[in-house]
Image (cartoon, rainbow, N blue to C red):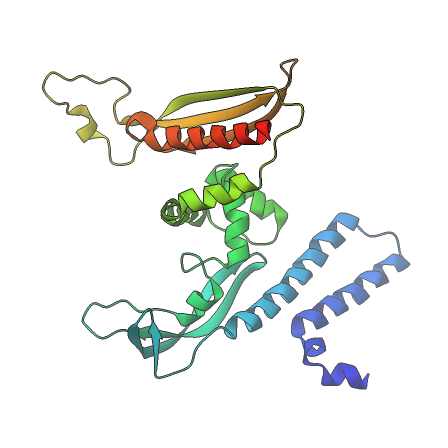
Length: 280
């Protein structure tokens, strides 16, 4: 008991609430077996509360308290201390952090806590952003929102989910070649692969802000597709065995681009990588 009182972790309110919940639940067995699904749901809720409490404390340690800081050769001076809520994989957590701003009118403040902790888009913790981006790669924002709501951990809004990949895309494109090369280095080719097939296709998508202006065409030109829409590119590199059974499919997709130049380059590089592994 003496160790429990000395350990601040064991004095955590979230942990104490979890312990009380377990004790209270066990008393229900005196009458009849309680609802297991309800126990799972409640247990998860209390466990997430503990995770949020510990995350809040840990994230606070990334803050910087100083009169000024220097980032990439630019000096930023302390301006204000305020609280901010971030979305973690266990749900929202609120911390107090310091903001700094460089000299000059209209200059933008920075948050050392966000920079040091790797906060994504001023909203997501790294793990939360990773989970959301993975699900968004497979589902629509609406379906992703419904899935996280069912899982009962974090509950990002549809609008936040929609903004996340749009915010990540510029960073990905800036390092696309080197990061794609790193991903290809992890790929494997089935030993029974005997045939490689490459395909390119497209699908028309409605582009934001392309309504009325899309109806105007240059002299002598006419619309080649639905008004206000452009063709997004998609392609695959597929491996088959000698019997024609598909073994592996590598998929690529790009937003509308003239002649699908980037997509063509991606597929060509992927094909080269696959052929090298087949030969070796």
